[in-house]
Length: 148
Image 1 (cartoon, rainbow, N blue to C red):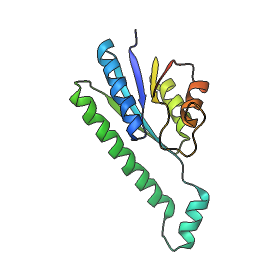
Image 2 (image 1 turned 60 degrees about the vertical axis):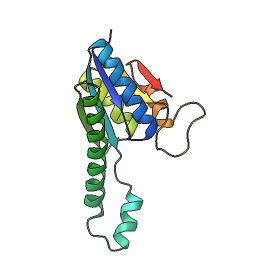
Image 3 (image 1 turned 45 degrees about the horizontal axis):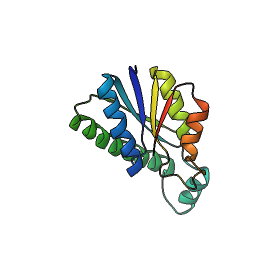
Image 4 (image 1 turned 180 degrees about the vertical axis):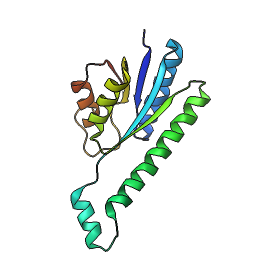
């Protein structure tokens, strides 16, 4: 049924549940799996604040921290996949709005299913779905499995 599954994660506890469910589904269908985490572009206000505080190269510092965080999230996900006996490809999309990065990645890899948590680490949630999940569901043509 599904041949190419994209699992989105931000490393949160609920996103890890989505990772486990997505890997289980991939194993059942013998599907290819890609796991993506997306880091947003630096905030101009935050960079300006850090610059005024004397931090040198605030953009470079932010990007290094974002890359390090993404690597930690994806390394943990790869361990989970390995423990379930499911090979997976890990992808970090930098400098994108999370929903846009997920939808673009799904299109790029030819995913036939996106697995995502109902909400993650982001601020205020929508009534039923987190804002990023809501945007993915409404902006992709690919079926989306939302894990609560």
